[in-house]
Image 1 (spheres, one colour):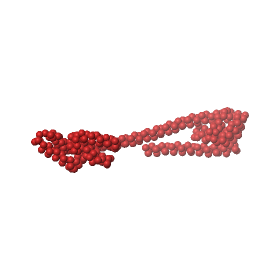
Image 2 (cartoon, one colour):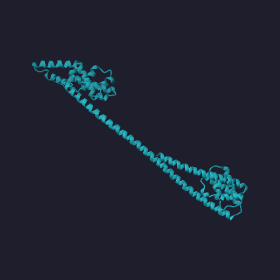
Image 3 (tube, one colour):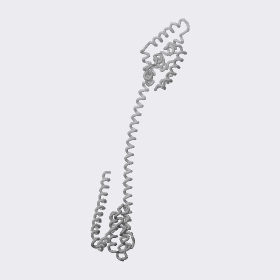
Image 4 (cartoon, one colour):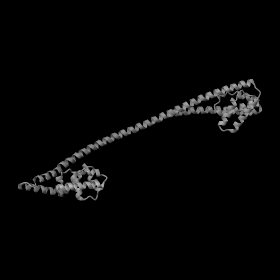
Amino acid sequence: MSRMRYLLFIVSLIVVSGCSFSSRKSASGLDAVESLLQSDPIAAMECLNGYDVSEFEDSATLARWALLYSESLAANNISAPTDTIVDIAIDYYSSHNLEEESRHASRLKSIIRGNENKNSLASALYIQKEKEFLLYKERMRRERSVYAALIMMLVACGVILWQRHRLNVRKEHAERLVSEAHSLREGLLTHRRTCSELESKLMSMLSTRFNVIDGLCETYYESQGTQIERKAIANKVKSQIDDLKTDSGIFSEMERCVNDCRSGMLELLKKEWPDIKPEDYRLIVYIACNLSARSVALLIGESVDVFYKRKSRLKSKLAALALPHTELFLSVF
């Protein structure tokens, strides 16, 4: 890439240098002709006819030559077959807002038209210069086409290189995203496996610990109100249930298991509803542990009907509070 830019720079430098040298050479020759025009118009005319118009490198030099050629025609009192050459000067100076030169060229046009001296040799040379001018225009058209094609090629190469760079950048970005997605997927799978293992462990703990509570409560209900010999069993079970009510260790374990299995629900509840009543909080813990209605009723020391009423009121309170994690809290009901 750097070699290509260097080569283009060298080619451009050679072209510009060649054009500049040719332009300077033509300009210095025309300066001499302009000086000669005052003293020897015939010699100046010969010098101007010696130029090959088709070889001029820029329109400014051509316009100056046309102006001097018209001045030599006027100075030698020679008429021109057409206005082609003087019009070259008029068109150039008018388009470049050079009013003084444009007016001068227009005056020369009127003078040349008024000359009656028709020289056949001068006319033939004039026609030759017209042909050379047509060749100059054709060469300029071809050069403009070449320059336009070269510019388009350079622009196309630039666009291709830019698009290629963009594609490479996008490819690298896509590869980074794929790599990050792969790493994230592996991390998620590892996290899921860990959570699954933790959940299995917690659910096993719940099933062993809280099923005991459920079993004791069910045994109490089955034993209550039966024959006298079974009263002792019912009283013993009731005593164990009463012990469970006041056992802070078991309740703390129940809280920990609920938080682990339900995305830290109880910690969020305390943070978002700091004014919750202790009895309402305890009720939510029992409900979140999936204990049966009769088991919860025994643990809170109320009847099953009272439990359902309290549960309904607590659910309504939570819904009315519209806490940030209300959906999570209501999911246990």
